[in-house]
Length: 164
Image (cartoon, rainbow, N blue to C red; front, side):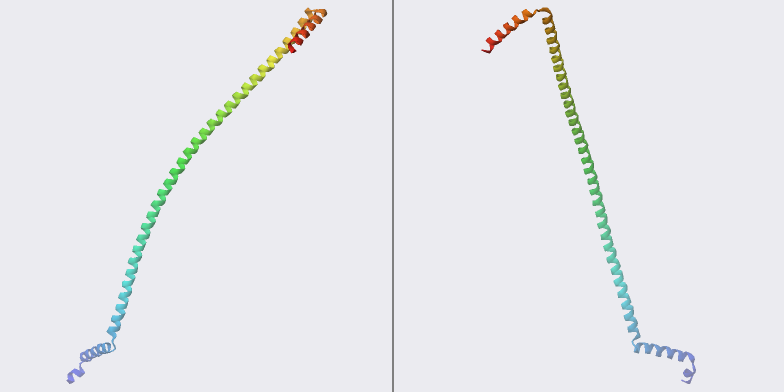
């Protein structure tokens, strides 16, 4: 046994055994195990959170993609509606323009007809005035005063019989 007390390997081995004994007596492996378990739980929770966030992100992405498709469809519908409205407005404007042109043409034709009627009436009135003047001159030149008096009396008598 003296040999063992002088051997350094023995003392090293004894130191290691005592060291591990103190560790076990101080419950260090339990503390290390708890810390490792705590760390493992934290990593597991972080992984679960990351998985949940990934799923939420995928759902959110799908939602945004769906909304984008809906917005594109709505934009297409709005564009089609705008094209349809523009077509209807164009047709309405053409119809209204045609109606205005017809009204203006009819109004112009009416004014032309009135102007023609007015011109014809003026020409007739002028012709009647000229004919009256010419007839008065011819009668004045070709009849004598005595004939005028006789004719005046005859016309007055004729007028008197017609009025009674």
